[in-house]
Length: 253
Image 1 (cartoon, rainbow, N blue to C red):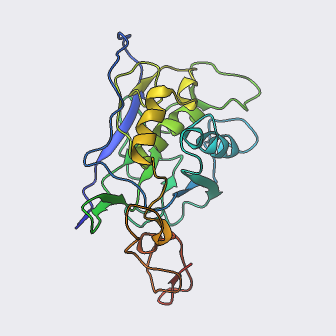
Image 2: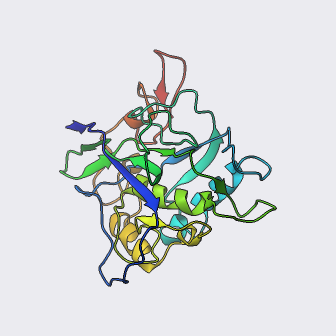
Image 3: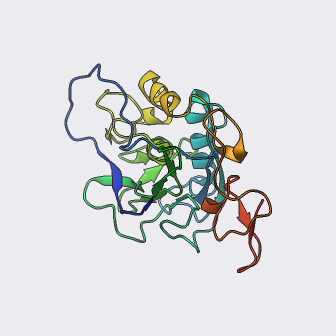
């Protein structure tokens, strides 16, 4: 059964110092994974308050795919590339990272938010993610480590988006202070760009067998989605997570 409830998890401003905790990572409930490594489309317009060469686009792509982040915990768990937001839509099977918030979902102290409600049950009772999109609050001032003038009461795009991509992959908020998936961050703190032991343990709990449903391989049972050459309407219809072609004549690649 496909679930399309619009649920949002947000990263907020750090307001109050709290004591550290020894509690473990938190998975989204129900636990869910992608069939194949998602390719996240990063907003090629950039973010207007960032003064590096491209508004933070390359810095964000590099951060979320870095081996210092999620790909260091599980090799090849995601890819990313810059692309257009002209077709941005929730639930369409194309995970996107938007430097704006066209849905006006991120208010108040929210810095960025991820829509996590797009998942469905597999035939073996586990759950697959078929979409997850990120929006960013443009009312705050942003920076990257590529900016020539450093940071002054701004928020690092890299750290915030590595956190949001953790939600895309199936992680919830932890109460372990200093972890990437801790639910708040202070200005000029790019610590969340580097995942910690708690974050990595959570991702490995989800993807310890990598993508056992991708392309029909692995020990978790074959992928029951479209194979190469099968007709499709979106990436979510294909084991490869790649549906291409002209409207009405798309096939899985």
